[in-house]
Amino acid sequence: MLTEQTLYKKDTVSSENTLGVAPFSLTLSGHGLKLNRARTHTLQVNVGFLCNQTCRHCHLNAGPTRKENMESGILNEVVSYARRSRFETIDITGGAPELNPNISRLIQEMSPLASRLMLRSNLSALNDGNRDHLFELLKSYRVIIVASFPSLNELQTDSQRGDGIFKISIHALKKLNAIGYGHPGSGLELNLVSNPTGAFLPPEQVETEKRFRQVLKDKWGIVFNQLFNFANVPLGRYRRWLIKSGNLEKYMAKLSSSFNPCAVESVMCRTMVSVSWDGFLYDCDFNLARGLFMGGHKIHVSEMGGPPEPDSHIATADHCYTCTAGAGFT
Image (cartoon, rainbow, N blue to C red):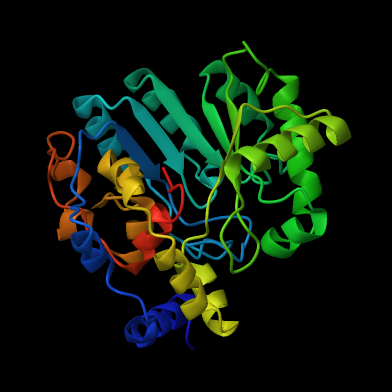
């Protein structure tokens, strides 16, 4: 029986030569550009693909049936790497990182090792009734919350993420506000991430943030610090949906035609290293999803003495057009 992951790999291989877009590396060279590392100041930790949701736009194919989850031994190696590397920012993601049984220990041990500690949350895993202790833990360690909130429309959100998710997310945001998150001067940062629900690019970010701020405040009394409006990356379950709906070539054409050479300098892979649930290193979470190891070489976190060297090579593929379309993806 073919799994969703097997089908995705098969469709990726069969479609790569028919997308009608130039290889990303050729587009870079055509503009006289290289994509090499600057100083790496951010460590992203993907604790696994287990998630309580099965989102249509997920680039990792995360979901309730995924078994990949960072175990204690790998977590110890990742903490040791962060300790010897002195990163400025540590960014914890998944899947739903709240579902990892070691998440509290990871937050506690990472907190003194960076000036900024972030947790990416889908809100529903945090607010499932079994993890109320995490709200106070996050507050105690002043963890920055980056919360997925794709749309102000309940039907669109539930269509993308699952029935009832919109209301659960609203309730979670209210609970975060109640303990201080999102309020000016509180020092408890709450940022939202919005993604389109179809095969199109996101609208202009400033206007989108203004609309979200007004509607969330007026309808539910919710406040937040910033909103980031990102395009969906054509990997994982989202790529499968693009293929099934006949939109992959059109979407790739939109991304490639929107290539902005000015965005290359600030893409996140230039200053980030991503470590997977099993301890291997990647240039970003999207390359992790694609299986492209850091710089094209399979390296375990236990083998690294410190951050990747400046000017070292970054592995690229067609999904990299997402991060350089329009205003970019930083």
